[in-house]
Amino acid sequence: MQIVRYSFPTEIFFGPKASGLLPSKLNALSHRRPLVVTDKGLVERPIVRRLVSRLNENNLYPQVFSEIFGNPVLSQVVAGVSAFRQHDADCVVAIGGGAAMDVAKAIGLMIHHPGHLFDYEDGKATRTFDRPMPFLVALPTTSGTGSEVGRSTVISDDVDKTKKIVFDPILLPKIVFADPELTLDLPSHITASTGMDALSHLLESFIAKGFHPMCDGIALEGLFLLSTSLSKAVLASQNPHENQENNLWVRGQMMNAALMGAVAFQKGLGVTHSCAHALSTVCDLHHGLANGIMLPFAMEFNLSAVSDKFSRVAHVLNLPEKTPGAVVDWLHQLKKEIAIPEKLSTVGVKSDDIESLVKVAIADGCHLSNPREVAAADFKAIFEKAL
Image (cartoon, helix red, strand yellow):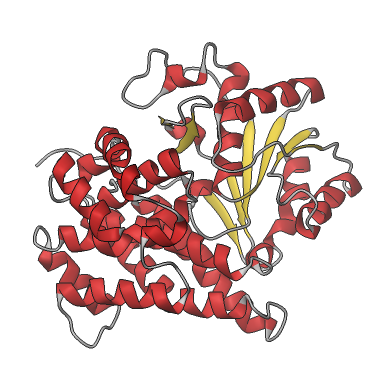
């Protein structure tokens, strides 16, 4: 049996109003000049304004960087590094979803590390992670990527849109403030698509190749939490401030499921994510939405390889039939309940795109840990079925 390493070091403060602890924690650690990294869609929202005001009120001197939109690209990281240095910042506060988290991590890495960000690409690195990063804290506003507890950042090339993964434990935020109040105002379609992203992490990591019983256990409990909360969270988003105590509970379950998904997928992901990365690259599709559409088709491809694991998932989900196929049926039904499109054609993907999608997907590293080997012809068949 091989020696494997387990590591779950992130300090997390979870619960309503946990974000209110941010100023006192920064002051206690003598970090006075945070660069607040968020995205264009959030910067004028009340949650960001309140957090920045709270920092100012507590003798801190924040500067906001919000030049982040869509799938994060290298130029956003370069601009963020410049903003950090111009502000003479001493720490980074990431507020937002996966894009803000990924850009914040990459900014932190490049403050003291030399060269080009892509010199540190996972599996192709020509430089080492041998210098400190500024103190980094994270406040997630979605329950999807779980990037706030992940040790990687995914940044695309501005020109060809290929996604580059930079991976090292140095990228882990030091503190996470997981406050479900920050997710109350998420619209239903974002709640749904980010929730499907979390679901894809949990399910793919559980069935991924490799030995990691801690990740497997976390993935199964996360699947249970998500299965009992995602539909409710999407419904609650239509009236977020009615029955707020219940809404906060549901949002909190979703937030924990997302955190758990990101912890679990250090074991590996699979074919769903390779498809989703291709769809983001070729068709500029939102990552969570791409995962949501592709998940049942990709899992159907995997049924024969790990039928025992799908049966365990069926038990955890408490499905009427405890069979592998019942999990795929449940995924299709869940998509209907939360208004995730059933087919790629609904979101503008065309048959002419499939050749390019297959080319990007086969080059993506995620499918290497898929429990069933995936060839180009397999990707073509999966995309065609999903079209």
